[in-house]
Length: 453
Ligand code: UD1
Ligand code: CA
Figure (cartoon, rainbow, N blue to C red):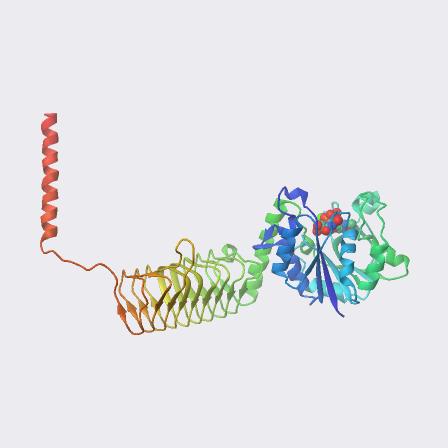
């Protein structure tokens, strides 16, 4: 059956004590709402609708970045989860599949769990969990998997509060039925809110079925405070490390490796200690990342070796068997097959041809203070150590630059280019100079002791 996704992300998150809307706080370098979108993605939804409110402009931007096919709708006033879903109903017009409602601040729901929920053939299916400490969660009144109703903590009796089976907030329901049930919601309750949870009782009152699908409590962890955010980050990293190990990545010290939500590492990739992955990193099979590398927005092909101590920034595109060594920074640059850039180098806004060797200390001088310029180097070239490539500049295939050159003009194919001061040797002058200096030192010492005496 076709699925649609509604993500509730209008809340402020007062307890975060922040100017930033809660769902924009980050775990694994990505806003919480991106995690919810990624989990929901597994359902292959035909429509994705985000309900925004607090900080709507910023939240909508993040939603568009992480799910370009999503639509956003605004909830001007936060009158409850049922009211939030009501705002999304117009965007469900003409859709008659299953709707899954998710919260933007609950980043750990497993795709398989959502699959199980979506597969339930009850009229309303609710994702529940047995809470170690049920606190203020809504309680599920159920007989086995048959769900009768949900009671919010504020409205619950003493004996209902004793129930440990809790509402995660994730609900699945057919679109047409959901529309009818949500439109029938009232707000006559302890919070004066329109509770989405009331649709369960309403469905049962119509003689329809409702079911609980349970999951592990860890999956439903919601984030309400900075402490919970920090805990969530730790949990996320543990999960990513385990997934990577399971998928065939070798890590000598997994606990020191940090992942982003969208990090992709192929089979037989090796990652050394203290490596940080920012967003947008893809590493193909068999590549190796040595200790202390920082990578973001880059693509590393098979057989490439990176680091130790390398920094790859957005737009770094490394072909097969490239070697990037220590203290090398690469930004917005394409390195073709077999390029070697071993030490102390900056390559920015550049294109390097296959098998070219970049000497230690080379810098592409790409920025004139206002504009950025490109450096293009052909295949099989050899850039001497400490060459300054003042862009825009093109170095031909098989060309060679002398160490210490400041290259400001294009170099043709097969040419040797040297651009530095001429070397002048003055025979004996070093010795003469040193003798003069030592004599001067002796004179000063003698003058000083004469003064004392
Ligand atoms: C809700 C559930 C409760 C469940 C708990 C799980 C209801 C009535 N209660 O309670 O049964 O145990 O989640 O965490 O649904 N939101 C909006 N607009 C609103 C109100 C909320 O977009 O008007 C969003 C919030 O941003 C948040 C989510 O909905 O992402 C849940 O809202 P929240 O106020 O945290 O609900 P709880 O009171 O925790
Ligand atoms: Ca909450």
